[in-house]
Image 1 (spheres, rainbow, N blue to C red):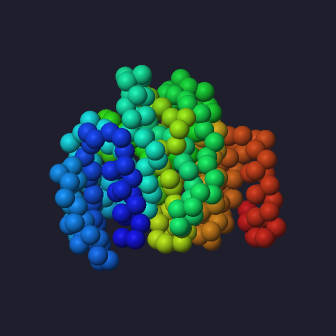
Image 2 (image 1 turned 90 degrees about the vertical axis):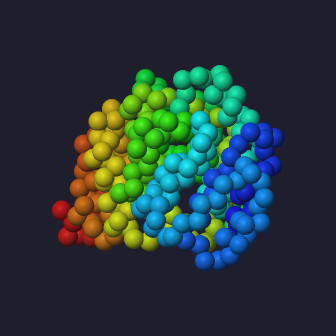
Image 3 (image 1 turned 120 degrees about the vertical axis):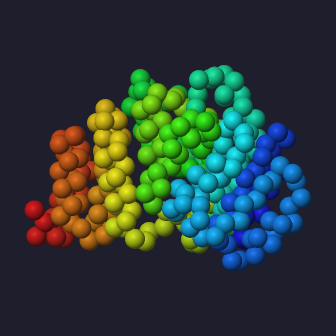
Length: 285
């Protein structure tokens, strides 16, 4: 609740006026419902649902919001972030200039918990599709949902976010969009002020075992795409290995390192991690 007014205010601050804002209040108990009731703009549609009623986790909540949306495009915004500048206008221009594009994102301004600028991600405009270079695919694999815009009918046709995933649902969606020949564009300008804070986040460091299982599911679902893009595959597997190790599953972490080295025998990061983890865990195979 403390940060939500900033997020909603950033939508009202857009120069464009032809938008609708779908707010999904998923079981809040902190006064959010009462504050949302003070919003009197017809473009704001609020849905109060019991916790878990929208589906499973954050993916289910986002899917629920998309099902309520009526526009051609949806732009995801987490309640602790803010839209940057006049991003709606910039996205309209990008769609006009790229009529076949089906998803858009941009760099992020990273802020602390108080909203004070810490750094900006480096980015330049690029296009991502099946025939794009590996650097474009790597850039797309690093995006996050907040600030991502997707053509609504395309999103629905792909069954939206996978609700079996508690993390990496954004990467899974992007892999599937590209695999189904739906091109994307990264804007040179940022799309969001992304707040890094100590409060609860979907990406916090708890329950590594479940999060590792989600990353492993993403690999199995998208193995053909990942095999065609080895740098993306290796980056994803490093994430899997980190969570395996933090979950205490050292045998699986070591096996993941072996898979990385099978894909890229000279991957220095995998070799360094292998040797380091072996020193700390001599019983590893």
